[in-house]
Length: 232
Image 1 (cartoon, rainbow, N blue to C red):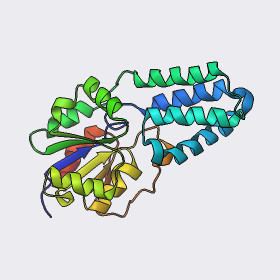
Image 2: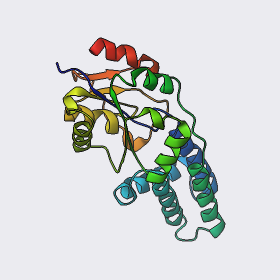
Image 3: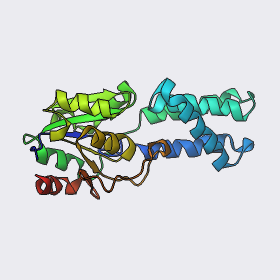
Image 4: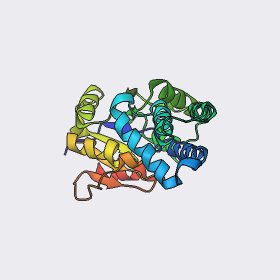
């Protein structure tokens, strides 16, 4: 087996909290439109709008804001009041300015591997927002490369692991999303290390590839260095 040379890290909900701000904003959205449906129904309509709009707006807060506005127009039959739209926009601005809170062991895990492997941050979403969060996290200088992509696919990992190493066969992807971080990385030929987060986006669901020889799961990033040593 070829020696591991490159390690990719996801950002949102792998290195810092992110989904919690979406959940809080969803609750605020459901409260604003409470006269037009039950919370579960409103959030189902919102999720359906997000699913439709992913290919138009991509992943991130700005697309989420547009999906909330679209849903508000739909559920009110076009009668949504301007102050409600204003509240949705305000909620979006708050999300775009939320402080970055690193997850436990994130910095320590990266520092322990720095200099021994090529470390690459591979994240998707809005360019400006991802750059802001990375800068505020203080983790930027620890990475050998940063890639903000529109989506994470098998082709994405093949391309990036070839750019930052000798290909996916000598690479590992670490992240909280089975759909984006693990399954396509495994398909490309890399190792996939799942670090579950307590909150997850419904559109990021995928079955756990438990029988795959290169799939691993750890409780938190504090266990990553030992896992790599065991694999190596």
